[in-house]
Image (cartoon, rainbow, N blue to C red; front, side, top):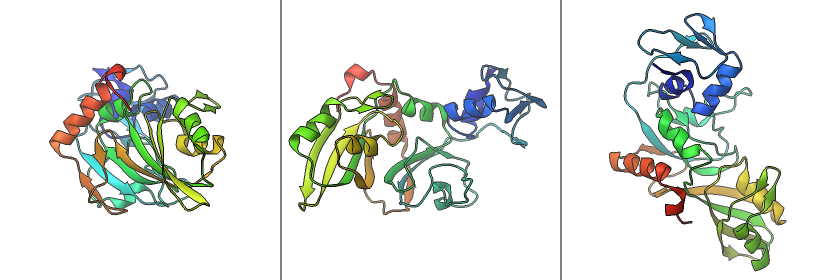
Amino acid sequence: MERLQKFMAAAGVAARRKCEEMIAAGEVTVNGRVVTEPGVKVDPEQDVVTVAGKRVVPAADKVYYLMNKPAGYITTARDQFNRPTVLDLLPAGRERVYPVGRLDYDTEGLLLLTNDGALAFALTHPKHTVNKHYYALVGGVPTEAELDKLRRGVPLAEGITAPAKVSLERSDGRTAEISLIIHEGKNRQVRRMCEAIGHPVLRLRRTGLAFLTLAGLAPGQYRRLTPDEVAGLKQAATCPPAAKRL
């Protein structure tokens, strides 16, 4: 027996927190009965679980994709406005996977997709500190004092951001590219951080996650992670915060 949301995530329906939202919204049935409590336990071999009328079957093998997301794609499995999603970039007939975390419609770069609900949960949970590396092209040229604000943390609606590693990479006098390494995953965090110091983002790319990079991947391309990379991600997601450094 296992918790309903854990079974759904492991089967590739969505990340665990999203599965909990689907359950609370009444979108899930167990043996024909609508269930709204995520703590309900199910037997994957005996119980019939459906989401929006479609039966959820246990995932077979776990798969892990690393993608270089282009701008103009939604980081969800479905979009109510029928915009292209990152899943459209994967081959037809492939295993059912879902994105780990989100990149905005206009944001480019490194994105993981998997049917491993446990790893997706670990990588996105706030208590874990997996580093994410971004390059942001911003309007204007930030001063060192403004960059120091990002390094110390800036106030957002949900609180002050954790300290970031920030450097000015280049500038043409009108715009600048800055490198940021953060480990949080607040909604549109990098864009909001830059807006908070008066330098709105014009282009945003995520180029690194933990030890992973986009080496060899053009926009729209993807590859499977190696077993060593999967093991490394699991280690990165469970390593105590005190043992990590930006």
